Image 1 (cartoon, rainbow, N blue to C red):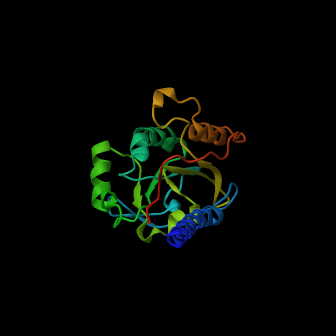
Image 2: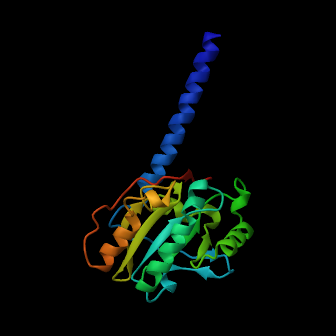
Image 3: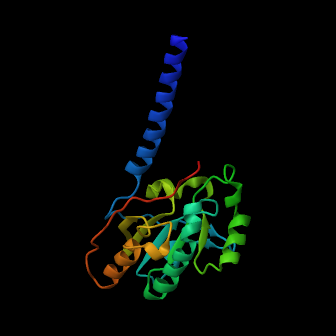
Length: 206
């Protein structure tokens, strides 16, 4: 009995270490502040293929890894839409990317994405990370997880990583709007005071 318990304990420990290592590897391999984010080409909900290079007049991007099925992501949908309406015309459009494995989360299929976007009236591209190749490059681990990029000499430099704001539960109780503060600083030519925060959300499903 004791031997069985010991084997079980070791097995659980190995699973925990493996999970932690996998998460750490994604984060360690992901982009850091100041890195140049590689462009991508992903399918949008309208069937077109979208790349950052398509946005010739953009000064940068608000890249948001999000989905339909995570309650945290759903709680932020209106705020993500508001970010696009506020900043797209100022040169910082939202680019939303759905990173989940749709076999694990069928509610995040392209059809479901199209339906959700129509229901909510999304004005930003909502892209599918087919094959889950892009989110590991960024180091995203949650939905939502935000990366603000600034275009500089034909590069897309990472300027902010983390959460949208400091209260996912109640927008009226938000005290610090991390993404808005960061984009406002970039538009004003100032340094971003808070460059990294902890993303709060659901783990990306692989």
